[in-house]
Amino acid sequence: MKTYKDYHMGLIGCGHMGMAIARGAVRKEFLERWQIAVYDPDPAVQKACEREGFKILESEQEVAGLSHIVLLAVTPQVVDVAIEHLKGAHIDCLLSIVTGVSMSYYEEKLGDIPIIRAMPNTPLQINEGATALCKNEKCRADEYDFVFQLFNSMGVTKTIPEDKLDNIVAVSGSVPAYVYYFIQCLLKDAVNRGIDDRAARELIVQTFIGASELLKNDIRTPIDEYINEVCSKGGTTIEAITELKNRNIEDIIHDANQKCIDRAKEIGR
Image (tube, rainbow, N blue to C red):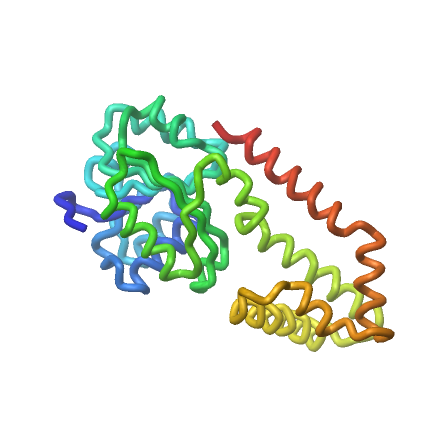
């Protein structure tokens, strides 16, 4: 994709996710370090970006003026401040990873500009991310293809209608925390039963990895078949699964997801 600005991608905000995307772009050879610029008021973040070889800019306006893709990677709580500082800037393409902020909201505030919304998750930093994307009509195919391929190089990427994007927070966006919490519960129970903490953690984590790889390698087989494969009749696992079903774990997950989605809508625009 051709660009006539100094930097191909400029980040506004460079926390964990922003840094993971910038590093991934370099690691996967989509961009060179000198093609990435950053504005973040935090001195510690600036130093980290300088160590990465990224150019530090002075303002949101400078990022927009000098960068082809403007990656907005701030928290929802401060997004309005960033938008206010971007008003009047010529934005070639806005890439937002801010949860809950719609493309129409950006269009209302910043005008008829090309916009891509992304919802990545934290495993992206080890090339195992899951990202949902959507774009507005103003966004060109080559811009969207570049962003799609960038995220896809760091995991799995899917195009999702924007009206479903808030729901994706309960499919992949927040789900790593669910996994960590479930592992934590299993680990605490194992330790309480006298199993060594480190050994239990390694076994539990590897079990999650192995089970996930089986599902990943055979996406056509119904998940019930995998469950039944482990739950032999009259065995041990079926007792555990029956107890989880009796406790309505499915309803608990549904309610937790709804809380997550409701909050995404609440903090969104």
